Length: 306
Ligand code: CP
Ligand code: NVA
Image (cartoon, rainbow, N blue to C red; front, side):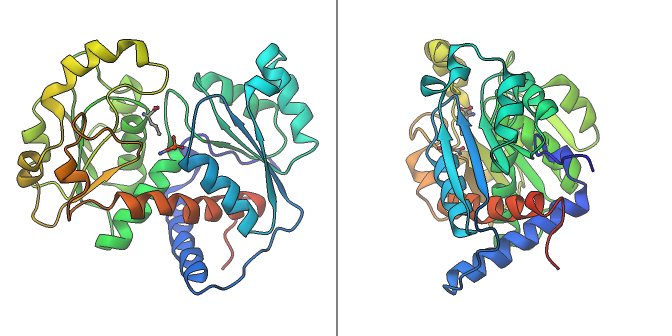
């Protein structure tokens, strides 16, 4: 049987995606009730982080521990990967020792190469191209707050980055409308834009993008690896801060989400992220629940318990 990986939302069928989102809610309720559910004693998750992380690391490490297993944190600083051992060799070696891998890296091609040589499921914990685990949490959060996302309108405001690309995939897989407002030169991936045709509109005006939206979302102006462009980006993105004025364009019950970490006064005003429409803390917590559902799905060979 072919090993299932989770490198993008397109690695799941829309039905599997919905199953995982439902399962995430069940696992959340179990945990809230204090019920012990640890079906994977002895299972080990290997985690390679080539970039910094708070949420991804803790949610995966806590998640696998709660499921009865354990995690190993690996950074290029203290593995041979950082001294040039090929990704292909690392993938084959680690596959013989752990049951699941999670990788956060720069080039998406690196995780694809790892997955090609891995005999255990590989989970994408963020690349320069996308951040599918974050989208699982965003979808779970919107659905639990508002009952469903199909047919809704989402406004993405800011950089056409890895998160924006993942919203494009989510629009396809969950059938919602996406309005993207980005400055010229910061557009998301052209192929994904093409793939989402009919569900996406690319705009320059953030006020127009937010009009009657059900969800307004954004992300940092300088993603990890782009720090040296900070000054130029501050200038180019300054009209794209999500403010109360932008939120006022959206539906009265619209939500605000942000994958975090956030920079108040840059991509979002403090008033919005700390205001009543923001659900960023639920969104961050849901990383834990939905990734437990994802790990369960992958450890059970691409199945979710009935
Ligand atoms: N949202 C997110 O992935 O956060 P971290 O960078 O802290 O993992
Ligand atoms: N776009 C951001 C997301 C961080 C979770 C980055 O890549 O740094």
